[in-house]
Image 1: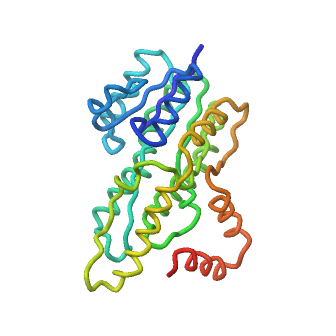
Image 2: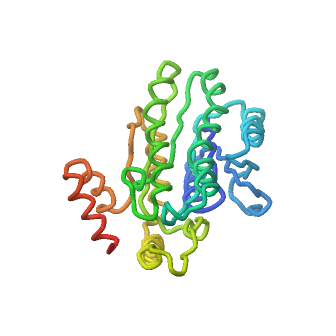
Image 3: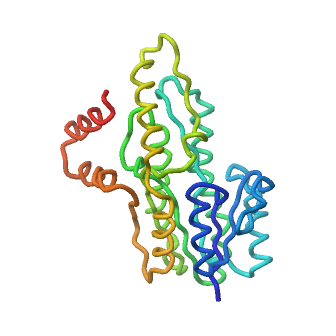
Length: 267
């Protein structure tokens, strides 16, 4: 029997690539979008879901259960980028980012757990970021929200271990998607003490996305995780140096690692 997969944010970017790959492998895939009417040409059904709206989450999960009778895999992929000097990012934008990147996945997990527990199996994959392993300049809020989801995964795993439900964290590096266009960018303010360093860093970040890895690499990685007998707790997917940066953070003195980041961002 084909496994049933729910991918939040499955209408574009990494989510779309994952869904299309899984379709080829005979999985039954459902994606989500806040505006599904914009994706009528999708190769798999796109349900209306906003991770900040619990009612829409419950409705989408109910639709899948009513149609398929089960839900085997949840991929918490929906997320939002945010950049800017922490001092200058409006508080409402900080809260909105955490609503999408942290509280949203929690609410989707809460909606699917009772069904997975009743069927006696399930896999939840939380898509975080390599940025969640370190505090990055002018991406501090994004790093914090993704890092929070990574730690939540570690705790959640232990709480659901008796239900035969697995949970894992997948941290991608930079991939060639349209994420930069969807980010909230704090404006570069004339006369701000951050005007030049933030402006230069923003250009560097956008260039990293433009030259990022092929999203199909993430799709293949997710397929391997779904078909693994015992998924690992953490996965890092991306360019070698991005993954190696996590190793360096673990072994280098804090100030030396900070200096490497400052040199990388030319700050």
